[in-house]
Image (cartoon, rainbow, N blue to C red; front, side, top):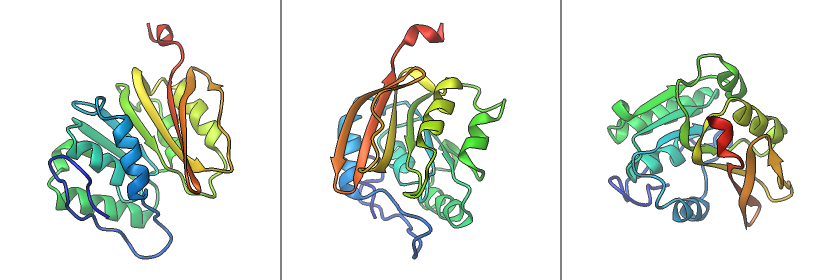
Length: 189
């Protein structure tokens, strides 16, 4: 697995063997970043269920200001740390090794909103709707930001979740990418 574009283009990332960590496929990553091309420079990024850190690192390589990686899996946390160090991104990265929902619900998280939120939960994850509701209730997404959620194609997430509304859905084999925007930015004032 490689970084596709930007400052670290072509650099290989560490991917652990086994099924504990499933990185986003390159064609899925390419689609996501093609859509977000004008949204990355200077962005604050939240990478949930970060796995290898693939999506957050790609954003950093393309000019994002900072990425916060969240994953409770010990192998994933170690891999993210290794990849951040490999590319010298320590000063622009934060790793939180805890359950995603408990991090989101924590009263001090975060002190700001995120321009881009990536969420790539395990395929057997069953709380996609709760995840979206928690992100919306906590107002984690900047009023003009994007939330990108990977999920099995068999799952439909159309509609609105609090203030998050589906803006675009793309099916890529067994994976669907649902892209959310804030439905009512006036809720932030």
